[in-house]
Amino acid sequence: MPDISLKLTIATPAQVVVDGLRIVSLRAEDESGGFGIHAGHEDMVTLLSASVVRWTTPDGVAHFCAVDGGVLIVSNGVAVSIACREAVPGASLQRLEAEVHEVRAAQLDATRRARVEQTRLHAHAVRQMLRYLCPQAERGVPE
Image (tube, rainbow, N blue to C red; front, side):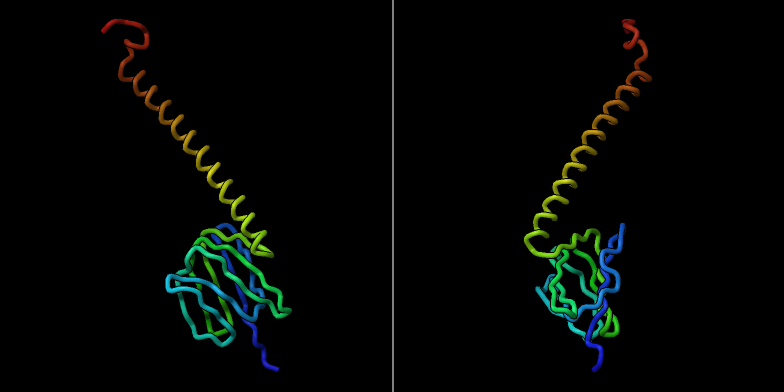
């Protein structure tokens, strides 16, 4: 019997989330809507929307991965590669939703902390410039 599987790879700049996993089908979403891919699919390149990519392995188990947009490439009808900024894999849609919320909350917290630190550094730099530009004011000497 001929091999009717695809090999799936999902990668972010920080890690390879899925590495050459054998799958039988994949569903994804781009600007035109949802689409499916099976072995033998024509070569293609598309920009994915921020969405959930779903695939089925040869044992019939469905898997999910939330992606923050990205590029999907089908090569020679046997390989599907997805390159994206962020990818959060999950075993079920419910668990994936919770994991995405946790990741997003952590990102927002890190962004807030970075903003506070940036403001603190900016204020410190302004104070340093004022000390340099107005040395008399620092010593209480009238101008």
